[in-house]
Image (cartoon, rainbow, N blue to C red; front, side, top):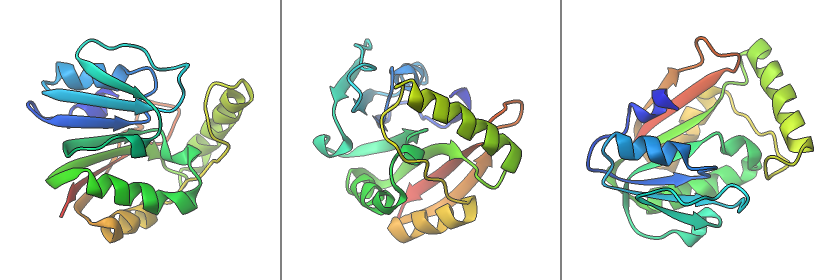
Length: 175
């Protein structure tokens, strides 16, 4: 999360979609975000976070315009055919030039991805996460998806060095 938080600029309004327990929201505040809103559908995970507006629900319940939107380890639990709709809603809630940060796993890293799938299946069986999907897309394909959705200056940062998971961060700006 620290590698993702390094991209949060002081003074921004930030929306964190699929915020879990709110750890990233706290990091964003520490980085100087002016306002942080989290949305999390799993009410077992939502907790008050000082200085953060915590919303229990799915992303359509959030309105307003944001400088930065984050989606961290969420997409894989959403069926791939729903990704474009989510990206459209994100574009609609983002200020021109806004920053999108999406952290996911790289399915092209076979060994690390195999470990990730084992761990995620155990978490799902234990009821720790919502969603039944395991949707992954190769980074070059996902970059094209982001560009079609209205994002430019899309960069891929491989942030999995030193971790057993193939973490990848997509950094993009709304056109």
